[in-house]
Amino acid sequence: MKIAICDDEKYYCKQIQECVEIYLDKHHIYGKTEIFMDGNALLEKGMLAEFDALFLDVEFGGKAQGMKIAREVHQRNAMLPIVFVSAFIKYSVEGYRVNALRYLLKNAKDLQKEIEESMDTVLSVYTQRQKKKTFRFRGETVTLLLDQIMYIESKAHQLFFYLCDDTCRCMGKRTLDEMQRELTEDEGRFLRIHKSFLVNMKYIQKISSYRVYLTTHKDLPATKARYQEVKDQFFEYIEYDSEG
Image (cartoon, rainbow, N blue to C red; front, side, top):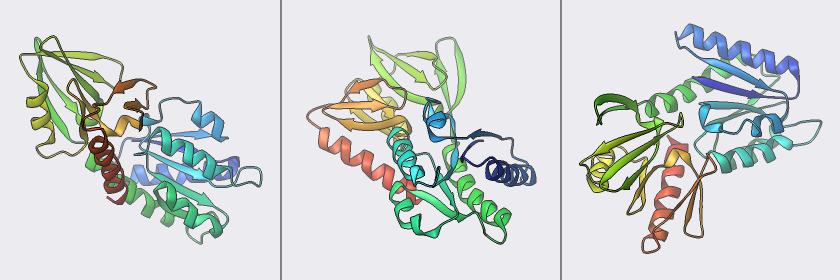
């Protein structure tokens, strides 16, 4: 797991980091934490999809900049679980508007316990997403996490799997219809946006003007005939995943 911690106070960054690392060690989970002292540094990181959770302070320099950061993060990666950490309870309602998992108070009597309970929820979401599948590509059989697949393109009677590590694998003699049935048999994360594209909704940033914009800054065409249905499926997925 990879956890981002964003707070403009070094003391709380270190405190949250220590609590998270104690949790990971206690549960024998290999994980890393990365600290960001301001929201711009976090947003400039680029691919927010690499993180599995974000602990985010609400106030930066006495202003509620954390909410602005959270909205931007949510636009870029709607699936990233956010845990707000603040000295003030007054922002809690607004926090849940960006699908925050939890809202913690910095002055909690037992911050370790609060963070461990939050990490229980984060771990539940993370585990649900770690489903694997074995594929037969040209010349080799590869087992992938489904969340490693950003999208699949059908081209020249072949399927091209574009992965989150910027690699691409090719599969011959399969149709996108067949792959869609195979991937959606027990998974609701892949969305058919076009006759030639099947997209992992984790990597969708927004859908607008018959285009699907990915968190990698790439955009793909959306079918006009089913455009509203595509949007509805995406919003239903966001709502379900944030509740789960």
